[in-house]
Image (cartoon, rainbow, N blue to C red; front, side, top):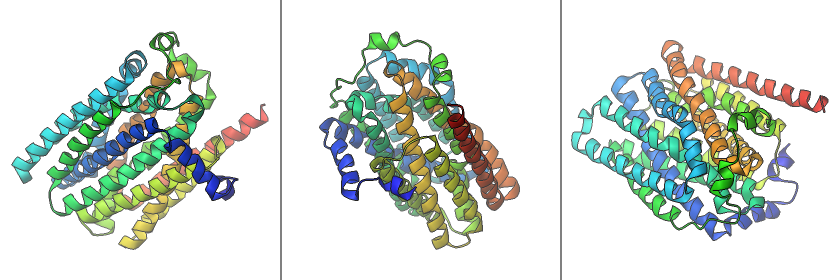
Length: 413
């Protein structure tokens, strides 16, 4: 298993596969835009989560915040997928990033002027507007990979997409730690505004490749639902992703309470845990991008290890122990996401890339939208420790079902 994780070749060959993808100037522009998006998004998201928790003192409120943002992505997914397949992806993606820059900058100015008097309604309003923008933006960013690299590089590029986002997540979490420690949440929103604008400008410099499928061909792709039902190579990874995201990757609901109650810290402790998790996510996604690990069995095993570490976090009482546990959680979580994204994007019919990406987004954010309030209620009612053990058991059960499904499919061949 470990040899597969690193790759059957030596480390130099594995790194060479990464360097080969990064040598493409087109991909570097795209990757830079994704890095900026990730950095700004996470600085904004962590400030948003902490402010909601600070104002209300309830994990359920944090879960509802996530549900509002994610729920809009689910509702708008059919429209978003169609737009991604029928319109110029480059210009539309640049437009969504520019729109995000305007909203985040406006929120930054409002938060700076109002300070501690910032109403919860203003935060929820910004969450809703950014949720609409994100509903269109998210499938676009995934589908756009096919317009950036040649067809035989899509799997590696899709895996690297997760790695690049993890780098941005790390730096965005660092910015959140700094500004939240200084009680300057407005600066986190400002970071998102600036990075979104820069990302928009970079996307406009991307030149579509020969892998790009014409808009006419995309229109002739047919209904996406029937395609998903008859394509297990796409739907099974999505099913595992759903179990992963429902509670396990909803850590934004848990981390404020872990920092506040278990570790008896404040916003600085919360941001440190978020940043360590980002480091783990980066490590896992880079290892996955460099490796030859593939297949449903590998996805299920990654999910099983992730679930065990989530449960172990319940025993943590000290910051250092919490950082170690969160690092491992992030590593296997980031690796799982990287492999799942690469598997789905490379297996998808090119004519349906946008709609498949939208369906992937529905699973990812839809599960978060459903799981967030449930997890928030569980934390408020029973505490973070019980919630962490429950999440670990649930996710482990889903991983076991996944392994059994893989074994059954092999026997039926």
